[in-house]
Image (cartoon, rainbow, N blue to C red; front, side):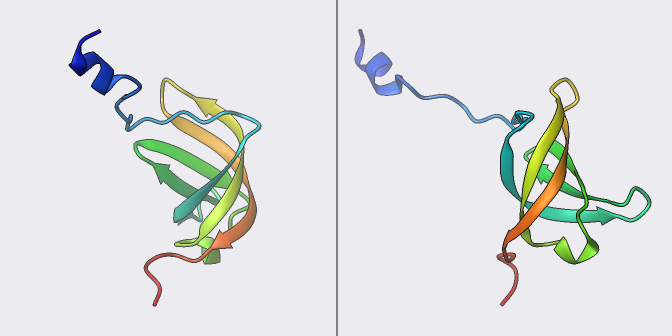
Length: 92
């Protein structure tokens, strides 16, 4: 095995389209609230996660979401709000 192969072993590039596993819970920053659809929207790279039961006051807060569905071809997930787990890094 070459030095370069040894050095790069285990390395992999991060994707801008992370996948989400239905049944899992993830912590995300809620970026938007869509009043027309009555749901929040979080972005994880280029993956969009729609959050049911999120409220407008949850925008710019870190929340826990239970993932219910994920469409890997479109990088779109759907989940339900579980809890607020932190404040935004933008607040003073």
